[in-house]
Length: 421
Image 1: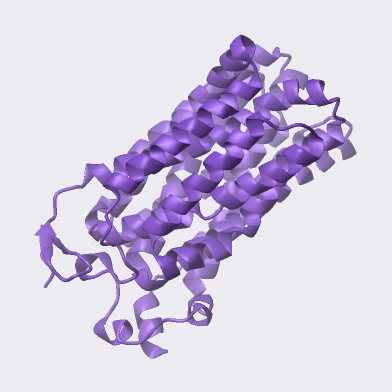
Image 2 (image 1 turned 90 degrees about the vertical axis):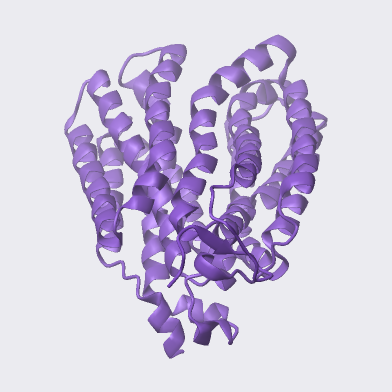
């Protein structure tokens, strides 16, 4: 029987099972700076458009260029983490995206910016899979949810602070120094990672960290075997739904609050910080909750989160006041935070560590498809109904229901599946 107070390192030595805050802190900083790099472009687009005389279409292309390369890199990025180990991948990534962040600050035209932001997405794309791989390898299963929660708290912090931070810095010194400063900060993080991320990490985890059997460990698990696992496909669909909700809300709610709710842009920004706080709280506590719940209990909680989200979007579809809409979005953001933790934790607790990066990359690929297409679909629906957002909310309600069905069908008997192979 495994001892809950110890874990096994890749070389087979046992270590004290106390929670390691150093690795979490390093990954937290990386996720934080990456989140700021992504968010500030949305605000920098205003002065960039003015400086280079861009059309609305060109501005949209500039924002989407990052999303496209970020999407493309999900699957190969996960494979890189499995093949070369998360430490090497993480160090390479922070170097690449810091260089492209600095290049953003010295860009000389639209085409240059387009190429640079595409390169930035290539550097950021594999980051999530490498982080998940490292957490899965370096922490016992009883701590994996907590570790991921503490790392993803950075996303909640970014959603609350990045809008105000970007606006103030751009107003004070301009958009170019903003990107130059973020690039330098990324270089500092690269140094900290080099010093503090564990050098012993390989693609073989042992002891409590790896939900594998001896029979599985003796034979290399292929990517094709992973794709035959029903759980992986259920999680991909659930993640597609989760990220569709996130980008649908973040992408269109400010416009909804201004055009339908009658708020000015500053007031809408402050209003959207309230749902951001809800996400922050969810990120902070969801991992610990999932760690302590039994698998069926956490699954039921995830299903309820999707179901309640669907009900709230239906209420918004029928028509609510601006304050009621903000309340609904706040609750939905909390559930999004829970699901964003639940889905990768299910992977870590059920899939073999050997393919953890590839599995996360595949599931994140589904999520990024949702983030890429949902703002476009919602925009088309708003245009088709002459500025009415009702059908856009109906679309998000339908997405929530599909996500709920995926969670209902979720099965976690992956060990038996791989053993049978």
